[in-house]
Length: 237
Image (cartoon, rainbow, N blue to C red):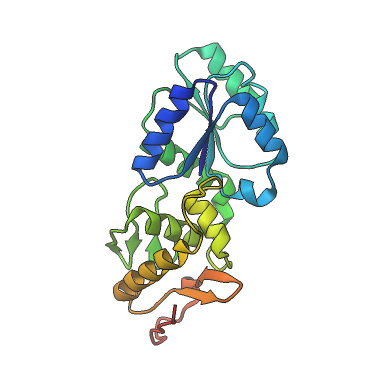
């Protein structure tokens, strides 16, 4: 989920529409509403945030430090004008990148992926021995071949690869894919998405790399530790 902070409603709505076209969840806040939300947000809420986009608001040089007290997610500042003084001030305030707005959401996703690889995810897998995800909108490579996936299934696979070997509950996957504020879907929809994803991976790989367990959720096997001569195993959903 991407969080857009801007006091202009048209801007937050515009980026929300752009992210929605890419199948990515976002939420827009005014700076005041964002501070109120950040103060009461629990840890699990913050872990699903891919990046914060900091737009136009009067106190934006103080917002990065407030974010850093709660989250390590990338902070990307959006500047309407290329102004050297403002750019330097934003970097000094703690943002990770400054881009000239308006900017396509695909570029934001690509910049976020690069920042996360260099910082947050440097000790976490961005790929396995047979699955490679890109986090910028591109379809994954599975066993050396591109696997075209619907957007929801792609986001689930990206999340599982990013947490390879760790159990993710249905609620964690739902929040990562649908966001924290979408009440129009039941979290049980994740079961259907994962079932379809597992079938496609099984057809592509010859085995099912996703393990499921009641009360614990789903886990992507550590494929790098799978013996090359191990017989394919198909797990029931």
